[in-house]
Image 1: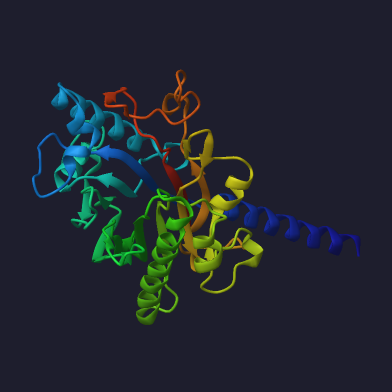
Image 2: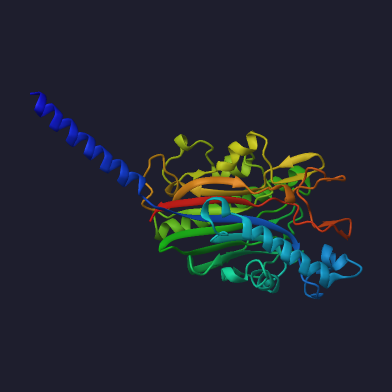
Length: 350
């Protein structure tokens, strides 16, 4: 009997050791998604078809070219650092807003910090009255777009006049062979106070329309919506229209999970204005990218966060403690942006 027990436990221990070794030997692949408001990334050329004269770049009295290339380098350096902690690489996909045109994106991806990453981009001219657009950058080796479309946001003021604002950009493609859909947003600003709330609610409704179109063709689609929403995670555009969920346990099929809501309730922010802090820059995901188990056979969310190292924080003056912005009262400050980037890690087994 004792001999039998010894053999049994020996087999058990050997099997358990092999299982543990197999578990420990699993290798994982991590990709970073990021979003960044580039704060008035305009070129130095006056476009008579747009109101770019009102941009901080065009308001500068001199040295515009020097300022432009310094800003390009600073933004490129930030983007190159996001994701290094876990992915050991800059983001595979980056949503960007407050860009003037495709020229500034070409200059950005060819800059000294990003040129070796082989970024390409998707961009459409937006109907925004200030002449600012949205775009998507991606590393060609990891992400392969197969479809993209620009959706105009049709909103009107109390006099029935159209308010021309940014479009919403959908890019669908294969991330390491796995289909995902990314929506890039820059929703209408809070200018006008409570009167502007319906504009962002309609922007959220347009998001739902885009998602419905995707799911009509792909019911189990993995959808990411990212952007500068000009709303905090607890406002009506998110809670009433998108019906976002803060807790993983409450997420049902095709629900939208917002990891930034919990961060906001804990006091985190990506922007500041008049002594108020805001978390406008967020990345939301459909339920298909969320897992409450250890199944990482396909890409799932690992972590979301705000990228705000010390060099991105203003250390003095009236904006002390806020993001180190590029422009202030018609002067170039030498900073980066008036927003912090947000990011998300996706993980799967190799």
